[in-house]
Amino acid sequence: MYLVVVLGNLLIILAISSDSHLHTPMYFFLSNLSLADIGFISTTVPKMLKNIQTHSRAISYVGCLTQMSLFIIFKKKNLTIISEFHLCGFSDDPDLQPILFGLFLSMYLVTVLGNLLVMLAVISDSHLHTPMYFFLSNLSLADICFISTTVPKMLTDIQTHSRVISYVGCLTQMSLFVIFACMDDLLLTVMAYDRFMAISHPLHYPVIMNFHLCGFLVLVSLLFALFESQLHILIALEFTSFTEVEISNFFCDPTQVLSLSCYNNFSGNMIKYFIGAIYGFLPVLGILLSYYEIVSSILKIPSLSGKYKAFSACGSHLSVVCLFYGTGIGAYLGSAVSSSPKKDVVSSVIYSVVTPMLNPFIYSLRNKDIKNALRRLHNRTV
Image (cartoon, rainbow, N blue to C red; front, side, top):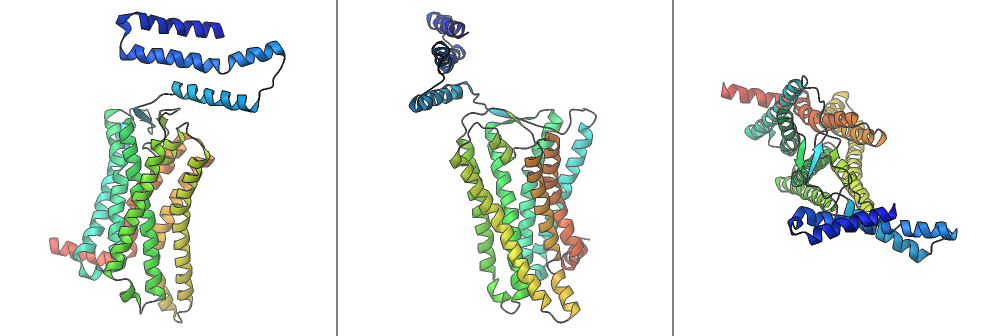
């Protein structure tokens, strides 16, 4: 087998080198592949043949590291450097495609319209020019951008019956997805801090939560989101070759894109854990600490009506936090426990499509100020 491999690949190299008709890029790469295959098999088989002849299975420490190094070098040459990925769709049934297209188009339009109405109500009504609604309008903008990174591409794929996305397009989609998911994450944390200040320190609230601080907190959230996105891109750019080209989701999910690579070392894993701790654990910890202080302050209020009013002030935010983190954690824990592509797709839909769609409904249905602002906006336009 070793002689056949070496002889066959040498003949290919010789044929390409000697024939001017084969002096083309395709055959140039083929000759290099044949040379790599000779080097690849030569890192293992000669040593194995020697061991069989000498009845010995020993290899020195230096010899083992050398063999491992050469094996990795030639194996990487045989990996495919790809220019596109294939996304996993919901179903191959042609009868379901129009239904899926109509369903997700409706959800996308409802999400965009709902969040635009919230933003318009906050901007047009002077009663809502407060820190809480300033953060809410930024959250609505982030939700519109969040769902726009995935659903339009999915709708295009359904219409064109194509699931291909370019390498650059995949990295761009992954980067934007990380930015706006992180913005949602951090804005919910900032809103929790705002509710804590409003309930626990009501007298100092107008002074502390001024316009400059609110703008600064949103700007810092954006900068942290951009930084996280760049970390993901830097990790992805380390991957010059991939072992697979199919992503088991309808978009370039960062965790699945990075798992396709053959790159897997200690430093890479440490960076991923660091990102998870900074952008996952710390915001959740901040929200929990804020609500611990909020609950402690509410319990000190003597009247029952006062307790109810204070708690209702943060009821909408708490509902959105539970929805966002509940679906997000459920999606990623589900993908870690189960390797079913269909379950991963369903979890991602709940996390990245359903949650942004429900946020404006939660705030409009549970918030009298938003409902009154929308009513006044409607009366002015009629």
